[in-house]
Structure formats: C-alpha cells, structure tokens
Image (spheres, rainbow, N blue to C red):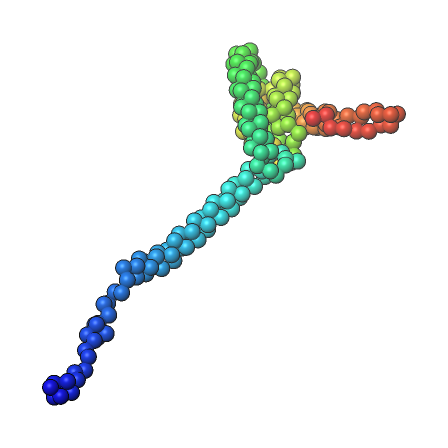
Length: 217
C-alpha cells in the first residue's frame, strides 16, 4: 500500500502542447485583402482627378480661342462668350444671305450690260481692298459694289476675306471710266463707310446742361 500511495505520476497537460493553427482567425485573410485593395482605390481616384483637371484645362483653352475670334470688349465668362458667339453666327448667316442676293443681282446686271456694251472698248483692272479693324466688313463690301455700279464698271471677279480684325478683297473689273478713277472712288467709299459707323458709335448727349458722349450700340 505504501508503495502504491508513494507512487506519484507527473500530470500531463496535453492541451498546452497543441500546435497553433496556421490561420488563427477567419478575419486574417479579409484584413489582408482590404489592405491590398486600398492602394488601387487611391490610384483610381488620383487618375480620375488628373483626367478631370486636363478636361477643364482643355475646355478653358477652347473658350479662350473662341473669345479671341469675337469682337473686342466681349466679356471672358463662359455665358458671355457663348451668347456672343451665337449672335455672331446668326449675323454671319444674314450677311451671307445678303451677299448671295447681291451676287445674284449683280450677275443679272452683268448679263444685261454685256449684251449692251458689245463692240465698246473696256479696260480690265484689279482693285485691291484692305481695311484694318473694319466697323462692318459686309456693309463695306456692299457699299463698294454700289460704287462700282455707279461708275458703270463690270465685275468679273470677287475674292473677299472677312476676319474680325481685317477685311480684304480683290475685285476684277472692266470699266470705261478708267481703273485709276474707279479705284479712287472705291477707297473714298470705304473711308466714308468707316467714318459713318464711327460717328454712329459715339453720339453726343446732354444731361443737366453738360455734354457727354455715349456709344450708339
């Protein structure tokens, strides 16, 4: 009995010796996945921001190009640029229709004069027109055509270029009066057109006994 009770066995706690599993938690893989996705999300946001910035810069550049083609004094905000551009396009359409009407009328007149002026001596010439910063290029052109009609000149060629800052044209004519005289008459007409338009833009007004000037437009 003493031998039996004297025997002491060492306790074995096997649960302390169990191996720790490779993945101690089911959330480890989820956490690692989130850490891997975050940089990609940031990169996409950065690319979107750069793309949006480039788009705005391009849009701003296009607005500035359009503004440079509009009349001087046009405001630089988007609304004013678009509104003025629409008005200019509508005005150009009207001018084009008027020029086509004038061209048709001139062709009919030329056809009638050709039949009546056969056998008479005609001098051929080219008249060059160049007006810087014209008040109204189309009105200038129409007045020149009227001037040529009054001098009895036949128009054979019209090459014109309309720009906001310049109006130029080459007119091929046949005339009995003389090319030099016709050219002088044309330049006098252009000078008078510009003078009339500038006078209309600045008109005197009287307020409280004082004289001031304001734009007619």
